[in-house]
Image (cartoon, rainbow, N blue to C red):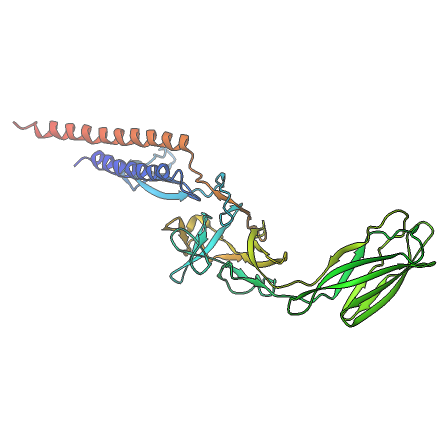
Length: 390
């Protein structure tokens, strides 16, 4: 049979593969995190019809004569270029800006993904649409150990932050220097005990010839201090009072005229609180806002990278599996070790370029047609040969 017949068949098969890959790219134009693929062709074995020879003293050298035997698919490569950002407004959606992959676990198997559309399951775990569990590091007492083992990231409304007793209160503002001697001002300061129960501590300011005396009362516990000021109203001395287990700092209170603005500027301690909302930082940190006004770290999202991302095997559901070609996963925190940063409320769109894909469709179609013409032409030649004997 004619060699051109089989070359044409190999061309049909290869261009059919190109059509399949291009069609899949176009089909996933709206798939979050999808990475387009490209087909590379290479020729197959060539038949040597005449060998080459080296140059001699009286005869020149000759080149070999070879007839190619068709084409084959050399490989299908994945383009991991960054896709565009699409705002969703959902706090559980995440986008990787840069290199890296989300680490997920499904059925005990570790998978990797660029698609960051996550939601909660009934246990408060962050899961992908196909049920894969997002991996990261859970916080312990507000601290995240990124060197520890990965685990499921869970965010539940049942999360609480513990209560803390008040140990320090800072007051600022101004006490009027033009107040008459004996003038009294009272300020109540809200504090918490170790169980989170709140109570008020009363501070009474009394104007004296030298400045202001301060008397504090916390139930049966009392404390005293005096405040003095320079002629220009700046603090001159005093201002720290021990009231039970609470340190009351008044050192920043000033003594200008006509102003009575002394008030609490900061105070530690809090009641227990439940989780109300959370936010994602660029470094993958999940920070919860609790009902007591406290913010605490809940966990941190982990990312993975590979020496050869092109060696990853597509596992379906917008996930990838590590292979011997890709190398092992290098796990790290976002923004470190060459890993990209995270953006909350966004997902990464497909990086499919429709104009390029439709051009590839035309190229594949014409290539298919040309190879089909090779087959019909070879068939006509064979027909002529069979008709030589009539």
